[in-house]
Length: 326
Length: 296
Image (cartoon, rainbow over the protein chains, first blue to last red):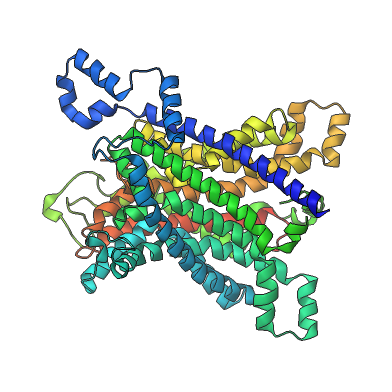
């Protein structure tokens, strides 16, 4: 019995992994095609207008050197082959390997995403509990207004205002100093993470709050909640132990998806606060037309994103025994 | 919307549908407020498109630079003496245009693909869902950014980039209900009666998912507005000198502490637009879905 269940679970996971593999190949094709369409190639990007002075023989030589004279299919398989062996290419501008750049940016982005998600949950869940505790009341309206604000105020607006006014009024702008890594200067690092994480967390609180509210409202009307009330369980305990527990699945899904977005979607906020994470690496790569940097970083982000979603799916089983039994 | 709720939903349609949808929309508070806020943005955008703004949004008057809001310049002027009111109206026009084109393309392509994948199942559905999965594997803003920078930048290519990101959402939203409708009695009956597939799809299946799609359209519009603004904030949106709300916020970032009005107007315009579209979406969902009471 249990043996059979384990085997079934194994088969399901194997199917998911095949699906993910196919998706990632699609992702690689899309990234490759998209970036090859970008107007202007790497030579004009690195030499600027001076590229016009090159003779056609010199241009051809450079193209051969960068490998962009090969047929597209060969370029693609070559790139994919080296990615699979851990070679993500080299940045033309800095001469750094993209693998090193990514390994240095990844922990920063992860740290920011974890702090921001924590802030999002700390704002979003209590707001949802507050608003679901008495639907259509004044407190519900107030909580929903905060949720709507989180949805509608763009992160770049909030970020720009924060950075401008905090540095004017308090003469405090930790992000103007060089970026400090967590292991080098934990205190400065956390100060530098504070504002970007707050901005991202505020934006995250909105979808979490909305999902949690509707999930709570649905669970609240179920029979077992009435039974608990009838048994005389304290209302506060019902709300946190019974209702919230049963309402967790959509909340976990939404939080997982949002966390995944942060891995590559924090581009704008990383840019405003000069946080050297993955998003900023992509943005700089795009601006400097560094194919290798953008291609490989986007591929890494997509891989992480897909993995986060896989882990989120597995989390259901931890959170909700009903899924485990099914 | 799940398979189980579909029949109940449709049988409950009768009494509620006597009141026209727009009346029910106006009766709900969020629908009314959403309509008003969106209306404000649309009026501003139309003013700019018909060149009815008080000033040319790109003409510079250095004498009047950094004027605070006054009767001539309602929202003040920027560092080049350009009228911010006219610029914000023009920016709203760009936003609206991009959002409409992006969502029109995404909803048409996505819904068509979703309906076909849902109705016919394999072998049609796996490639459709495969493409959707690939597009879903990117954080949306990242994908929009990469696509927008791949094309020569105009407002139209920005719109297309945003559309591509939103296609899989429409596929997902339309496919689910179609899976249930395919097995519904009235659709089976249509097949037995020998109706053509086109007739079944257009007369029986698609009308039953329009409510879901319309709600999704308003949400997609609000996301498109935010994405267009974010792209122009990082310098990859509609190219200058055309005013865009996001790049106005970027310009204002360095002057906001001495000239607050440079950021207030474009920022408020984005917020009003997004709030309006979201409330409109909430109101439409309530108005189109008879299971919700108007006063809930």
